[in-house]
Length: 445
Image (tube, rainbow, N blue to C red; front, side):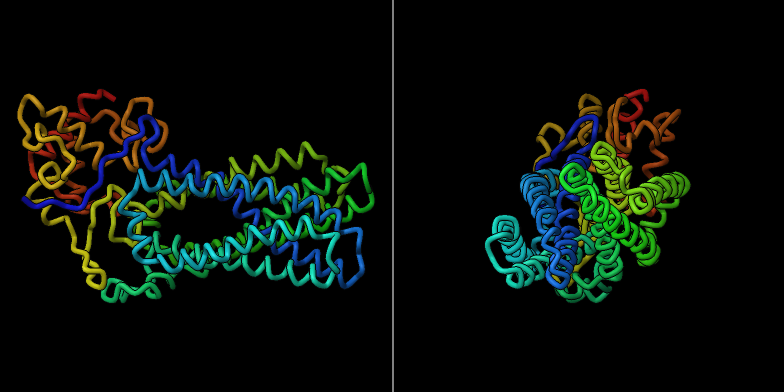
């Protein structure tokens, strides 16, 4: 019997499997992006303090460093393994693909990260104990290590969207995979956001210093406003470049929600532009509660929708445009000795080739048809869609309103022929199509 290298099904009701990684990842991104942006900000402030003999800037840097240490490196270090855990459960073959392509890139990134962790402790606890020139050198090396971790990770994340070149499929080379068509625009887009985020966090720190030193607080609030504006401009500029490097399936997904995305981004841009302008023109109006609230706004209205959009635009793939989100390999990668599993699935069916399907569901009968349909739906759809009537993320009910079994079956047939570029082209035997359609119809959405 032909068997494909599947893993046990991880199914999270109501939300869909992959969104557990998305929730953890959003929190991690706020923490990690703050750390990289703050590292560049530290280098700027340390240079200014050293060159202009501004010893009054060091207490601000220490406060910022303590916030960075607790927020970015504690929360980031917790949610980082959380991403590994949820991603391995929800998308084991996706993680396997990344590890097999980039194991040495990740190992190098971890070296940089260890240096970052040591560096942030040194920056915070030795700021008053070493000479300023040594501290400046340490700050710049910390910034370089932080940007280094970003550059290495971005190549891996970009591969998830779009491999480096068509040559990758022939060579399987890590360099062909890493240097993708959207790697550099993606990296500069992230850097712009990190600079903006460092300014947003900086406004919180400077506003909290108002009672200690009003003049310095206002000066730093203005500087953070300018820094945030610079970062925001870079985000808008490089976003245009980034969008131009995405594959056709990404644009197909984007076009579905284009109007809503553009409207929400315009509103968010206006809100933060006014906030940054207020920081520059009237720094005394930036109070700690407002600065804290804006961090949550950027998390909930900025990072979360942005990451959801990026994850959505990658569909139907989870990595390299050869592994579908439902963990099925969809094309040959000769350089890695990988073969497409679509032909064998079309011939034998998912139930026959998946080693973790219970024996009593291997063959569809009138008695087990609904149970087999439920399992097939979960294997095929749950990594992107929630299946329940009360499902929260990409619920199937919103796609199948008013459809009967024949209508659902027609959609499945069309998918099998590649009618939807953002859905897996998954051809199944007739009895499996029928079982899926009957199960979905039985839910009475």
